[in-house]
Image (cartoon, rainbow, N blue to C red):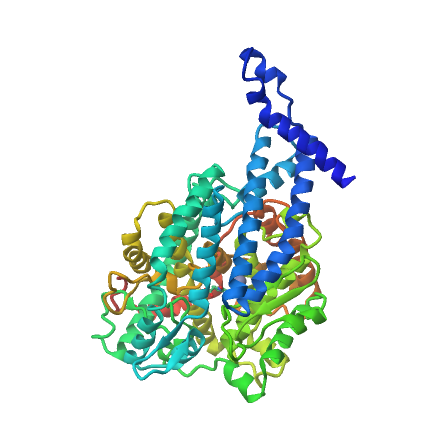
Length: 611
Ligand code: X8Z
Ligand code: ZN
């Protein structure tokens, strides 16, 4: 029956396609009347077939991708590039077919699925097979360059990104920090040419699909007109900006005291190598430098994990048990057998943390090079959030198996991690006592360094990419624009002049890997909205920063209701399901951090803020 319906469907489509040329010689006036019309039924059949075809191909493609990411070599690269090309070409063809139903009167659900199919690719391949192959090859090469990248110092010792990142967290020697910072950015220099070539190939693919360019395609995935979406981001950023500026002001002043004002000039952006993170994207690691003078008890999760002898698996189990306490089913045995929790010896892997669903059934996995730190404990929750989301929507039609908008996927695990409060840490015996409220400024500072510092970074990466993808800047200007935006949004600057061949965006995973980044900006807003809604449901009446939803099955149920929806409805509806409002809104952030904002403004009273 399946084969039969496919044939019927193909016949109808082909008839529609060739009608004009077949009837080209003769009575042109009757062409439109004679053309067989596509029907709503054809659209449904088309979608059914398309989803079957994609589902079949997706599984081996995912296995190839997993093999590559967990073992980067010549052969795994070839196989993953092949599957990438074949699958993305298939989807591009289906997306083009979907456009044939643009003027057919179909129900809302069918229309949504057709639209999702048209919008689904990230880097659409051109129809020209050689170009499609080239695009896939570049993607796989860039990813390998990042994944196997290392910095070798003059004495011949080489360090991986994981090693340098972990040192930079506690390193306070500005020269050594600068060495790692510039060293890692050597890895991305050779990416520049490939990246520019990739942009033009993907733009060709996007234009064949009817998009102006890749930028328009990426901005068009948010259930609103592509040109409206950046305005929505501006609105959210405006809500957070004053708080970010207060935090920035205090952090710069403290860094100035620590490193000297010649290293950290007080009227300029902050040099990007001093913030405890390779990309200056979250600053939690320099809490010791910027913490309040008054002694404050802030849980030392890293210390507790080490002291209690947690290994990588124990950390993941602990994270799993949080989800279990909300009523989510335990992870399958295959999760434990097939995941990669540690960097293996003797082969290159893509250490950047990720969560996988190999078959849309229950083959869930994570891939991480776990470090035994509080920061990584959070990342584990982040990754598991992806897995539980994937599992929750697995029974939706394929085109609905995904994030309400891409920020939701990134926000789920982070939302859970916001519940890793002192109360929770005591419940699981990681700390002995819950610090009283007089310590809250310290704890809020710790969270703000991680979350608020991130927000402008989360915004600027795609501000850069949208301009790059739309051709507003040429490859010669790529790096300069990157630093203009880093300064504008984050108030950080390159610590040394960047050479003409530098390609610093390539030093951030998501650029060579072509993972859109606005999702993380959205996630950092959404997770506070989710946290508040879930705390209300859990009946926690204390301040938001002390609320933990651990053990609340009601909260788990409410969360799951949203997760199960997948992308079956506009994200505004999913948001409303959980929070009661269809609007993304950063005012929850202001509430969460209100005492810290007051404190920062007192500290900054005599300082000259801004850059
Ligand atoms: O890439 C990630 C996750 C995997 S989706 C670890 N994140 C962004 C990053 O590391 O740059 C999480 C926060 C931002
Ligand atoms: Zn993620």
